[in-house]
Image 1 (cartoon, protein in one colour):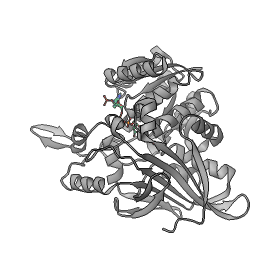
Image 2 (cartoon, helix red, strand yellow):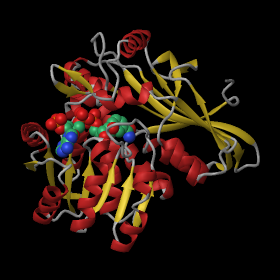
Image 3 (cartoon, rainbow, N blue to C red):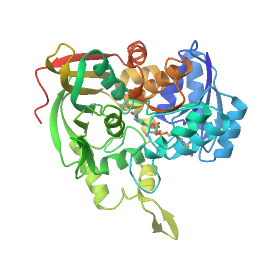
Image 4 (spheres, rainbow, N blue to C red):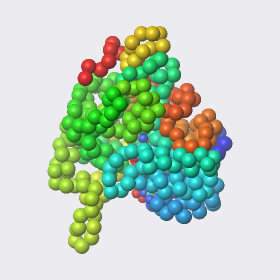
Length: 402
Ligand code: NDP
């Protein structure tokens, strides 16, 4: 039984809060704070209607460390679940240290002016969290998050050694819009326009953004084009599982998405450096975000399924070389019916709830800064099955042929 404060009232925050409210034996009291209080109130209304649970809400600029610390001292939660944007991570970690509260998030820190997706800023907090006797759990979404736990689950139960790992993220959903992103547009577009990097034989290999394309037949979705991308869990997985010789991340995109993105990039709308517009500095990507549909608004119209998982090849516990595929399939309409949000928010918000449950129940504990693959995967995997993200493992004939 524990008090939690969730920061961020977007699609992911909404799902996490609904799922926490459905587990009152774990989360005894839930508070929700975000920049726009009316968004917190709308989520609180939905939670009350769907579950009968009352949550309290606050307007908060989480970049204001003093204000966040004051709110923490007022509420006295056991844990802060940061579901705002990656820009807020360090400021919220500072407030947690000041107020003596555990910390968790779903995405690594990003400076506003450069798209990096690197852990070193947050890993630098290791000693301060250790000295304070506090836990910071990084990346408890789906990817990073579930994909990291999938990898340690395979390692613990099926492999003596993993040689190669491919993470495959497929969204087979159709939201009926010409162009929209399924989670925060600014972060999504920063990710897909970044140089692709994968880990191979002890070094980073770079390729131009969206230059490497493969087709893959996803169960429950069908064949889709997927693109090699950089994704932050590669950095933590290669650090904590150094035996893996090659780690790659793939994400599917439809042709219409790619065409729109190419045009937006060509005309400069994805730039993150300031430009002058009518005497005022604006960031083109932030302006673009303002005119694109909010991800949370896509819920009612999105149909289809997501299929996200990991393919690992290595030496099995039976002494045989093998390739295993572990994945979850999630239905957009089912996710919407349960929480009022589409599956991309759902597949992130449910693992956020589960990561929070691991910490407040003490199943995962320890002072310092941790990534998901550093803990025992079993209790997390059990909760995935029980709380809406069931997974399966199947053996493939051999490694991916690309
Ligand atoms: P949204 O943009 O829908 O929601 C973000 C929320 O944070 C908004 O309510 C926003 O407020 C609030 N916010 C922004 N800045 C501040 C601030 N300074 N102080 C307080 N609140 C603030 O994003 P999503 O819900 O789609 O994503 C949430 C997080 O989850 C992101 O960090 C994203 O990168 C991560 N994510 C992780 C995934 C994973 O698998 N690991 C997958 C998908 C997302 P306002 O509404 O006023 O703008």
